[in-house]
Amino acid sequence: QVQLVESGGGLVQTGGSLRLSCVATGFTFGIYDMDWYRQAPGKQRELVATISRSLTTNYADSVEGRFTISRDNAKNTVLLQMRKLSPEDTAVYFCSTYARKNVVAKCERYWGQGTQVTVSS
Image (cartoon, rainbow, N blue to C red; front, side, top):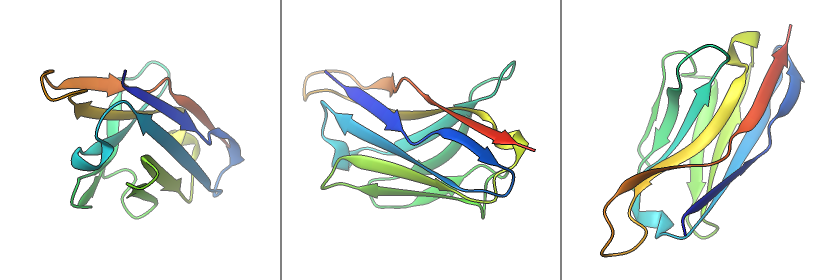
């Protein structure tokens, strides 16, 4: 069973920092890209950052230079370090991957339960 469990969200003031963590189980973590998405109230879910199996990273324009995604394959963990936070970053943040749970299964998009990040002005 694929599980993605996020942690690290919370309330922070403008300009502050938070680090989100996602622990993954149930699939071969090291061979799949890992993503962070976010969804603000009344808005569509958007891709924030991606890290590939080869450690290539990509970021949304809105977070480029402020957020850093990383992974620790030994711990099946993907991190999102967020700096210089603003109220516009307020959202539920989701860890996600498009992966197969075993060698015979088809690839599916999996999501964590999300962690709330609130940035006060």
